[in-house]
Length: 144
Length: 133
Image (cartoon, rainbow over all chains, first blue to last red; front, side):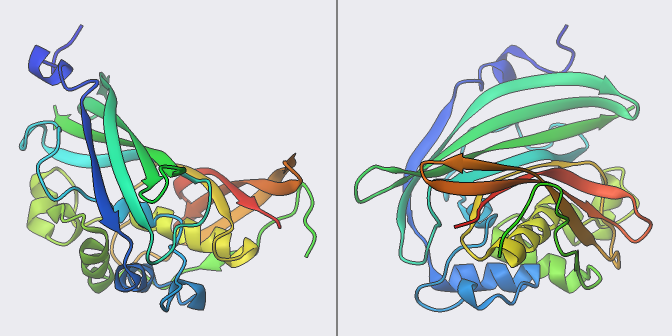
């Protein structure tokens, strides 16, 4: 039984966003490593390698399919996966896309929870080879 | 360096999580959810106050894995966010090698990993795979 998931929200399942092209910037990698407090020199310089969770910075500039703003009392993060075929480096040009693969709900101790599961793909813009991908599960919580 | 199943990875103890760090992480990651820097917004969402981005704790675990196996060594990182991290919390990352797998003349380690707070509560847990060569 769907208490929170309306047909409009259900219709988000299967929606793909992208691909959109981005260039991996040395400065963005450095700022990201700085924010984590990771001083590894490999994450600095013109040949910087991206830290494992750097793909979280791959954000679309335009609106992407998502639950409406204000849906639930708070948005939280449930789980995350990243995998790569090779390290991502400064100077890489990537085509990034994601697809909403599932939306589910359950009633928790503190209220109803609606989970959105998205799958990512990152490919090399030069030759179309797969660079990596991931899975992002976020949740919106409705307090009792 | 040779690794074996059952080996514990060297722990990583992070500095206390500060509001400045969360603001830096918001800017660097592009996650501007206000529950990560604005106490009022966090309370309006039913939280006690500002909490760290879950992805920051995953970032700590990424640092932990590549500290051990080298920058660019990670193959896969999977985590579940189990607990919230409040300001001032000191996070420790720890893990153990659960398997070593050969794949196309290379080998990678699979590790159980977790980030725990100063009371020993697990805030983020998961599995990492990293190339050994």
